[in-house]
Length: 238
Ligand SMILES: Nc1ncnc2c1ncn2[C@@H]1O[C@H](COP(=O)(O)OP(=O)(O)OP(=O)(O)O)[C@@H](O)[C@H]1O
Image 1 (cartoon, rainbow, N blue to C red):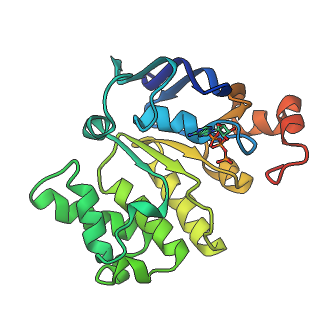
Image 2: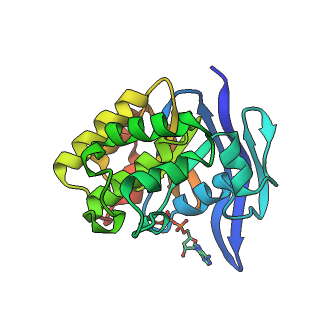
């Protein structure tokens, strides 16, 4: 299986602080990869460099064999990268449907937009809320809306930053079912603090600690890894 995304010696320094250090990451086509690590480990910074929101201090990012280190974020979207960060990406005064359509139009046109919107809303279970103002949705539903906005772009790589934060148990179950349904088709990179979710959805797990890759393996291997257990001692995710 070929790598869809590869980083090599990817690093980011903020003044004196090393946020991400020499990260080599390879995502295989169709895999679901979880990125975990204690608070401040560098997860968001790493993903920001992959998406093009944060310029690396050094190192490279390749997508589908092409070096994209210097490519702006919107062009990466055009290549098939979709990411959801915070609710800030949702337009509160627009309807749920319009929000998803705006996202879909970043990559699709014409009649493809309507069908992508319909399908994405059905996938996250928001089709009955399609006409409502997005700002009226609960926090959990807004997070699901963001995921629909990612899915509607028919991404080749879907990057999700803490998608289950603030979701109810039922919404988390729907989310894990949704990601399970994408396995083998859409490559997913997921920052996730909820270990149950990691266990349920990830094919492989990468653990960051102090900006470096501490371990990588199947959820089972990571669960049994002593260094990982030590890194999590005293943190909420342990
Ligand atoms: N713009 C910035 N300027 C200075 N330091 C930053 C900046 N962004 C992140 N950092 C620092 O870089 C380190 C890594 O932060 P990052 O947000 O990537 O970690 P994280 O693993 O995503 O954490 P969390 O799980 O808490 O979201 C932290 O020490 C953070 O304070």
